[in-house]
Each structure stands twice: as C-alpha cells, then as structure tokens.
Image 1 (tube, rainbow, N blue to C red):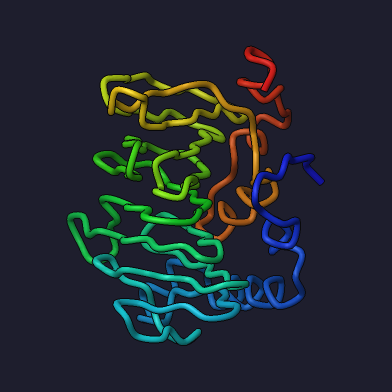
Image 2 (image 1 turned 45 degrees about the vertical axis):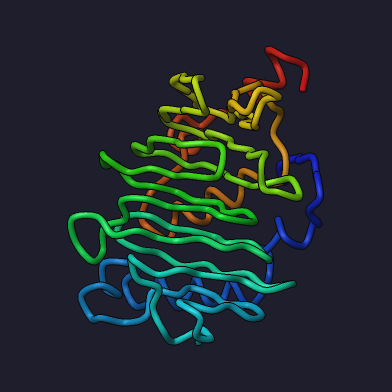
Length: 239
C-alpha cells in the first residue's frame, strides 16, 4: 500500500479500490469487455456508485450513464466511479463537477471542478483541460489528482501523478513533467492574483491511479517502467 498524507480526508475515501463491491463491479466491467464494449453496446458507463449523487439535478442510478455536458454532484459519504471516452474518474464525496463535451458525445474536452475532489486518468489526446476556481491544467495523456480547499474555494491542490501537464494560475505558468507525483498549490495571492507553489503528495494513492487506468486499458508510468521514483516535490522542497 502506498503511504499517503491525509489533509481533511479519511482513509476510507482513499481505499475504495479495496471494497468488495468495487472489486465485484470492476470484475463485471471487465467481463463485458470494458469501456469499448460499454460504448458499442450503449450500456451504462458507471462502474460503481456508493451513496447519493445527482446528474443535472436528478438522482443518479447505478444503471445510468454520465455523459459529456453533465453536472455531477456527490453527497456525504458518497463516491462515483465512471469512464467516458478514454478517461476514467473517481469523484469523491461532497463534490461538484461539470464534464464538458469535446468533438463527440464520448470526448471530454474540459473537466470543471467546482467543489470537492476527483482522481482522473486520461488516455492520450490533446485540447483537454481541468479547471478549478484558481487553476487551469492542460491535459495530455496523464493521471492526476485535483482537490479544492478553502471556505471560498480559493485554494486548489493539483498533483501530476504522471505525464505532462501545462499549469496556469493567474500570471504563473509552468509545464509539469512527472513520472511519479509532482504537486502544486494554486491559490489567490494577497493582491488578488493567483500563484503556483510546490506541494507534497496528499489525499491520493498509487493504487487509485492504477485501478482507474485499468478500467480504460491503460497503465501508469510506474507500472510501465517497473519502478517508482521519489515524489518530486517532497524531494526538492521537503513537503
């Protein structure tokens, strides 16, 4: 099990992949042929729903689908795992997210996180973004963790777990290239601008990324190379 630091989250939120219900759901997902078969057969794309969630204000049922253009809200002690196109998502409890449409119904162009947190794995592609109130991240093929903090949602945490991500917050811009966790805070500065500062790895694990990648037929960078590095920001900046 990957060691992880918790900040405002519980172990149970990070250990969803160990639940019997998820393992059964993932096995069923694989048995029907995974994401390709789901799309071809027009089946629901929800792998697991625990607790309560709504889509566009209507209660979501496990047999339904989440589509691009939808606004998704999860309630307390709830979790939602689903896949669209070549991307897979785990939306944590008390989160609000909009999945905006790309060139087709099954193509995600933009993930707009308004509150809460989401783990996401993206297959290769271009012109895709994750946006929070204080951060814009240009996504290629990667796995990332995004969470919003602060009473006014004015502080965002973003970890590029692997891949290449273009980050922008106010006047700050940087390109993150990571093979094993490189994280930043993006928050409003005192003069009203936003800024990027180094962060350590919190509130997510390697195993979460690995299970999401498996749902869409992908592997993480450390699974491909067979080795894990030191979490970049912890090494360089001491957390």
